[in-house]
Length: 513
Image (tube, rainbow, N blue to C red; front, side):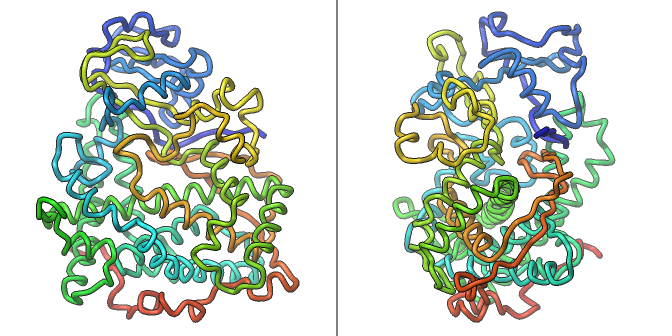
């Protein structure tokens, strides 16, 4: 099946990596390089990730590209990535489009520089919000939001319409993080158009990547003004959310309560109001954007591989039986469904890269000298397709790659969809539980029918998302699905959030309108 990638995504905006690579000439680069301009012949402004992957396949596990006088290094070989995982020698590098998000998220968990103290403070305060006890508390609200999705999909099915998979997964995951983390209802499934928060979020992510495609931000004055308005919308949305929480006084100990009321267990420090805003924005964006992409890609693969869907569905029927509302512990028992998700994230890691910098002068994998501060970008779609690790059929979708014996046989650090080291995704277990639960519920309720004419195209905006993916549904029949739907009334623990009064929802209009 032909697959193409479009969009305004990865990987531009690299600032001076060549200064820390003393023997850069030993690292291959694309042919036909031009003075000053660099490797621009044949480069695609709309498909930069595809562009880079194309060069990766030709140039090998470490290579360099040059644009507008700046040269940067990419890695994807398993031995190189394993060495970069050494926390004593390497750390997260905040660069690329991530650094361009600093005006939005500042020193939030995702965009903080390593030396900024608020990263450690926020991490220590918020990490307990993802332990088992907290996750069990979120489970009921995840079910409630999934019920909103199936209500919506039942309506589309009754009307004879195909479902908008990326759009509906975005609504699902935004509502899930908003309700579990912040007790808030965006009303996504009741809206005919995306919530202004979503529009502003996409705008800021797109602008962050757009900055990486031009030699000077002065060329983007109009886009910059739009970005300022998008940032104002994000700030306004979050400020209203926080204001409502302060007025109500209690969110039941969710993430926002922790941000507002919890002191560091050792130092007694608290997050500032500004940092609270930045953390909320970070969680709302990162907490839904990557999961919605993962679910969308998984549903695409399930629709294209009916034998995999049948096996996953049989597991759901066996493990959950006729239970209307699966319990928290029942989700982890969906081992094959989880392997479907793992294989999806192998082929399409929705956060497709991360950067690592040298803590001190070192030699990468015993071959490539790096000075302190030099950095490289790890290309996950290539690492996850490295034939030396995954075999000659690495491009094939096969969830059995994640059977326990196969996982144990592979070298460490060859599968990194959530990043690596101390700065890896804090919400990993949240995302995996949510996505496995949702896939189980949808498989139990529907047969997924692919459009034979559809060919996968992937939009890039820091994260990856299938473009234009629509599926036809068929409602399953029989005893196994008689109670498969999850209704809000089935989940009393989520009632207060699900049935929140309309005034608690986020403002619809932009500031000043």
